[in-house]
Image (cartoon, rainbow, N blue to C red; front, side, top):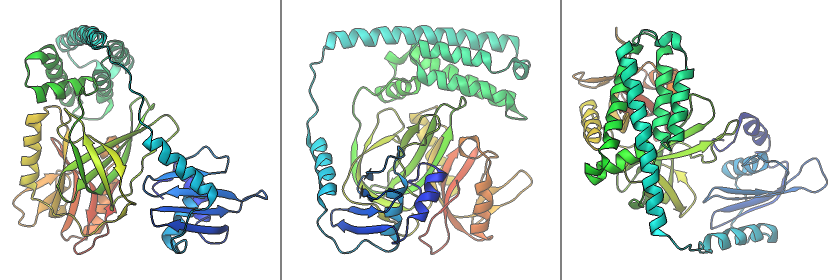
Length: 432
């Protein structure tokens, strides 16, 4: 159901999750299922799903992926099965052969003009440098005039500054500027938060102006934060990856939906953050339900604190995970975040599995406390993406006042819980 592109598809697919409308269903040992679904016309829809993608093909006219028929077939397969492994029918085999041929087709190699590439890089660096200098002057002017008028100034001036950063080919700076413009409307204490963001933005500006003198790893982080794509491929890690969390956030202008998927390698223990994006009105295409384990290669991007990764080819269909991952103490979580900040000073949070911990209400808000009660982490007022912390009440209900294992993001404002496991239960509870 997490693969559904919207609520309407989820509802319609649920109605097709039984055997009634289906005929000639089947599946192969390689992780492919197929079937014919009766529709409003005389010819049933031909539906096939490659579970290792997942990827979908259906003869219906829907432009949604997966369509309701693919969702219904998946639900049927998950609940009742589709029979013993068999050979795919001709219409399904043709689609699978086309997919295999595209995957095997080598990419056309284009000659690289290194001199032209160097000149383009120099021109872009010069434009970014000019944009950074302009942004620094705007920050100086604001600080000299004071922040008191920012509540009445509105968002327009910040959007204009962000557009200037886009013109300077620094999309990372543009994103930070847009987020700055939203702070005056976020409630009490906003001046202090705005000064914090000013300081981080100033640090990034100065780092860019002196990027040639930085250690290579930190320089790669600065380039990534400004908005440059990594110039080299990162480390590739093949592992069985446990899906710890998945949630969406919407950009301040409402134009982009970002899906954040947290993974953890069962053998390497390494965390990985996979991002996917959706344009206005459409969700991101990648969906990995919490608790599944998939065998795949993850290629980590340079300059991303060792977190950002892209998923490569999957070796098999995802399967349900086992018991909850081992947790660490709240003190160990803070130490991990501090160590990560040395690699990336602009890192807002670090993925951590806490446990066992107990949700505890207090005068200053909720906290997650170690069993000994000697240390605790506060739970911030806002959830991931700026939403409410409704997941906190789910966590309290799952806990029932007892210990739980919790995955989430620890940062300078506390710990944001994303997924929880009850003691002796492998079934994760998504809190977002």
